[in-house]
Image (cartoon, rainbow, N blue to C red; front, side):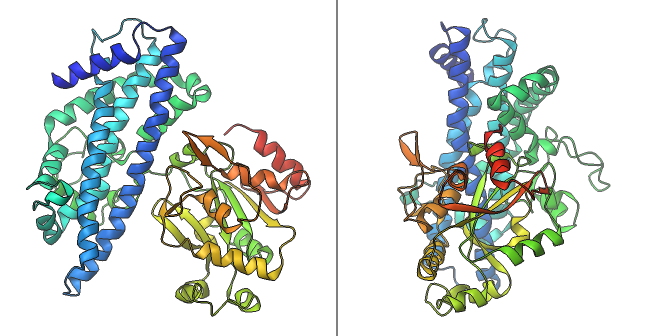
Length: 475
């Protein structure tokens, strides 16, 4: 009843006594604000998986958990509890729009569906956070015991972790979400044309469909030892999920193996093409900038423009020796990784990483660019500056003026600090996007276009014109 009251108050405050256009604009603004919360959830999941893997390794070796990891453990749970509360508020803000006698009679069918999808998707993000992050703590008794203790310094009370687990297993909560799923599935078929025209509606639709919790209602076959399909609205325990994981059932690869919890609708069109990777390796030079596009991933929709991600190729051992920096203190910790082919520095949701070109090529579109006038000393500094970002957390605020967190385009911005990159204001912050980098390869810009792939196909002629056309196309 309290949630219903708050939902009706929200509707009156945000959407009552407004024109149709004003209501749509208010809903879209809510979705924009909500996107940042979803992004935070993705980062939280990835960081949690990494922390748990590190803690398990420590415990398996019979060692005592270091103080800094205990701090990270408490910080992680505290962060989850805060994030959980925010997502609950988003989920409850439009839940009453499901009621037959909803809070507003003047809503259009599209507006009502959009509000209900905000509520449903937030609830699914909550369930996914549990499955992909908190369940790892529940699985490990030693960590579960630690997190169920009280820590006044982080606002954690006795049994807080267990309360989260109880909420996950709550039949009442599942029935509420089941109601939202039913409405969504009945209504979305009539909105296919709007999906192609409304990026906000499309974002919510992708968020729902790429949720592991939602996928569980549609993808799983009957399992003999459970005797029924695993469905979102059928009660099941985390122990059952963990049995699936240990028994190698396909669910494991979709849920437990997906650290951010967003199932790709397919692989990138350049994925697994050895000939493409080999051809690029022959062309790439240390310091090259790469931008890519992955329209099949939800996270691509967070980045405005055509291109969704940027990275830097730091080169191989031979190039770094030629530049005289192979033995530099910044390079030394990564020598073994570079020898194994990890030559791409990129800021991903888990943080700044060093990855292989093969890993990077799970994309549809790719552009490789090179600064026209870059002497050896300048190139060496670019590479060192890129590697100095290693280990930093991902900047989901996309603020170029922060140095403790780094986004993908910000990585290029900092590494090539002497280039006059275009920036724009977003929510009061100076930001840069991969498109802002790519435009520097047009006209008389400082970048030259080395290689270009469009929709999985190599562009062999008029590269600059093709890039300009790609930038002009909608996402």
